[in-house]
Length: 261
Ligand SMILES: NC(=O)c1ccc[n+]([C@@H]2O[C@H](COP(=O)([O-])OP(=O)(O)OC[C@H]3O[C@@H](n4cnc5c(N)ncnc54)[C@H](O)[C@@H]3O)[C@@H](O)[C@H]2O)c1
Image (cartoon, helix red, strand yellow):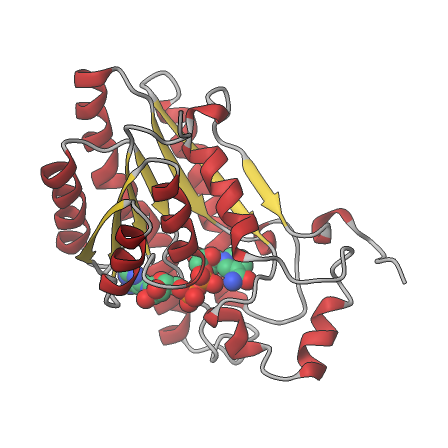
C-alpha cells in the first residue's frame, strides 16, 4: 500500500523547487495533490499525470486570505476532503540583510509570505481537515516549512528570513498543542541548504558555494528528494505520534560546532 493512499494534500509553492519535488513524491505515494502557487503549476501537473499520479493546479497567493480560502475550497470540491497541508511557499529576498540596512518593505514582504502565508493556510485547512475527519475518521497533518536558521544564527545575514522561520517554528508548536486532541498534527520541516532556484540565486559562483559547503559536516548540499522524504514522513500516518516537532534535515549543520576537515 502506498504511503499516502487515499489522502488529499494541498502543497503551497509547489510549481517549482522543493514543493514541486514534494508534489511529485506525494503523488507517487498515492496522494491526490493540489499545487497552490502564484506561479503557473500546469507543467508540474502534467509531469505528475504523465507519471500516473493525480494532481491539479490552483492559482494561489498565500498572502491573500480569499485566495488561500479558494485553494482549500478547491481541494475539497475536487477531491472530496483534505488530509494534508504542506505549507511550503516561502521567499528569501536578495535585499534581506542585517537589521540596520534591511528595509521595512523587505521585512514585511518576507513576513507576509513566510509567516502570514503559513497562518492563512492553517486557518482554512484546519476546518476542512476537521470536516474530513467527521466523514472518514482521519487525522489531519500540517507540515510547515521552517529552516535550520530557525535553530541557529548564520552570518549570512538575512534578518527577516531568519525571523520569519523562527516564527513558523513557534507557530507550529502552538498549533500542535491546540489541536493535539482534535485530530490534527502539526510539525515543522527544517531543511538545510538545497540547490533550488531560491538558493542558486544567492550562491551564484564557486567561491560562494564553497564558502557555504565548509559549514556542512557532510560536505555537500542536500538534494530536494531528501527534503521530500522528510515531508512525506511528516505528512503520512507513519509519524502518527509526532506533533509540534521540528524535523531538521541539514547534513549535520545544526549538530556541529566545528566541521570536519
Ligand atoms: N532551498 C533551500 O535551501 C531551503 C532551505 C531551508 C528552507 N527552505 C524553504 O523551503 C521552501 C521552498 O523553498 P525553495 O527553495 O523550493 O524555493 P523556490 O523559490 O525554489 O520555490 C518557492 C515557490 O513558492 C512560490 N511562491 C512564492 N511566493 C508565493 C506566494 N505569495 N504564494 C504562493 N506561492 C508562492 C514560488 O512561485 C515558487 O514556486 C521555502 O519555504 C524556503 O524558505 C529552502
